[in-house]
Image (cartoon, rainbow, N blue to C red; front, side, top):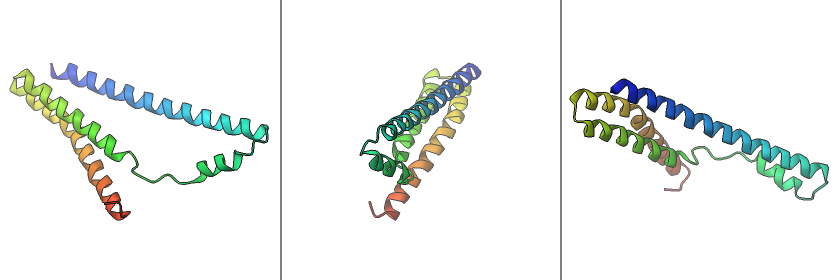
Length: 121
């Protein structure tokens, strides 16, 4: 049971990551296309569009959301192992839950640290 579930979890995670990156590429391509179109038509809003691109985005903007999703995934994996009732399944799912749980915890700590550093606490 453990290998099948782990393979499915890895494939699902990979699919989500690939879909996210393709979505980002699509949004970026559409933004560039819009700017090129505005430049070709001498639109007066071009300087404002270009300023929006050149401004650096603050790091860790969505770290809290990503952290909560990873922590929820870790909890779901652990609870799935607990529901199965077999000690081997619990150990396997608990081990699989460690990775997203620790990454989520690290992101949450980094997000809180960045907020305190920027004076948003």
